Length: 313
Image 1 (tube, helix red, strand yellow):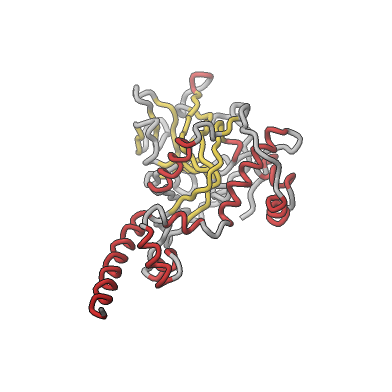
Image 2: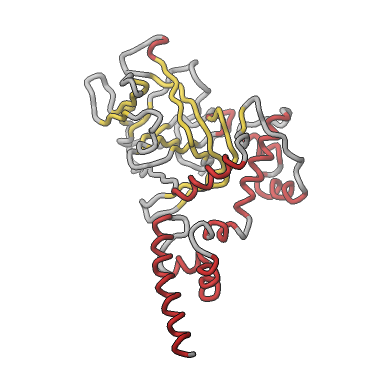
């Protein structure tokens, strides 16, 4: 699916998903704090699946408080934390189960024209949603010139398509991200505080040319500029996170979060690796509950193998 470039504006679609436990954002320009980090979101709808995320951060959204308010008092800034940057997402997702910063989420039509609302801990309304042509709850943004330049909607104008918006972030991935921040509290990148990084290696340069046609095009896709050294620094950090997905040991690292060394060895001897073992059970290595189920099955198989070896002895 083709995406508008930064010059065309960022994605204007912010859809509330009451069954999602994480926020998803498509455009790098939406973030005010940004930590390159290779992770993924999952869904149990439409047969399951996952979407790769390349960073976690904080976003600020210029929104309207209520349909009938106007002027400065009608606007607020909605801040969301622990947001996943998923560049190929169809739209931005506000997870209804992830609004801990704003604990009061009201669903239901009101006479003022709103179909859902977010309130803060003092019960002050901060933002509202209205149903769009696809019956999705869409966040109402502040009108221009307030806020960033918006691009065209990625959702069809006609009401024909049925969109299923759903995203989950597994507990193991949350813990892995928290562990990264504990090891390096300054890992996050800010607009005016980008961590220094070494120049591209030959392998990284080759990866850029193969996948994006070079550094210039890669930076442009992410809303960064090649003549700004801070942007180039950030680009290098993003590239290194994205290249982690090409590491053949990534599955092994993921599996080691759940299985012991003995369990890993057992799976390698019988199935080659953990993902193949779990696929044979129609389970996914990307799902925490599936990993727990696989471990239960694995322990039974290991016990049976031990017993069989005992009989042979």
